Length: 277
Image 1 (spheres, rainbow, N blue to C red):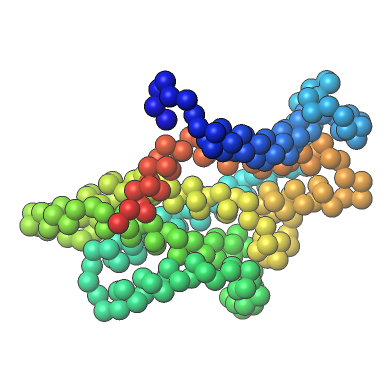
Image 2 (image 1 turned 90 degrees about the vertical axis):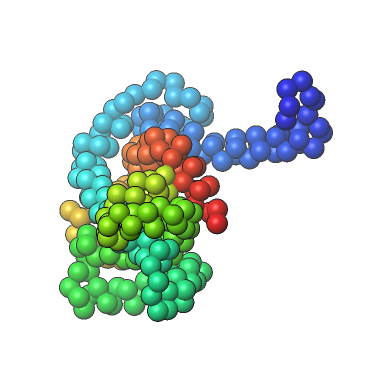
């Protein structure tokens, strides 16, 4: 909209609708933040969104007494290894799809893309049986490998398009200078797709950090629990402490929010660049 021009009625209605939708979406989050700073008595009373006597005791107790730091480290380990595996494996695979001619390249690429339409829950049972036979069921590596595999369709699609968007002349010039494919990949192409790599990292880290179904089926030892399972323990007690549940939820979502805010510029640039062909 240009400066000095009056918005049309349609735009006003659209903005009002978006504002109402944003308020409805943010209201539960605001209650979660509010509850994390209330004591048990005040949250049971309900009432005001803003705490009467804000306290950090609930967050401190949830973090310390309930061993949330250990669960936090477990989630960090699983998420970090998953992101690392995705970036290493699928950056190489996507470079091959984009730049190297080999038999069946298009068929294999579109097979990966087609997997986008397969619901992940449908492979939960066979995946559990396979991991049990491999002896990795109940371990963190038993979470990391399926997570890495599950990100293949979208990651390959984004990174392949990002590599294809780079002028082919750069590849030919590097080959003329005597560089091999590995050196071209590491020195020329990988730096140029950094925004897309960051986008892939964020798109991988967020669902991995929040993942629940496979973790619930796989992990039985409490010492290996991730944050979503720790949060479930809080909610499944005989007398749930809702302020502690809110505090645990806040601990769970804050790292994701911080990650997105820190990388949103790269995320937007990488996503817009990767979908261009």
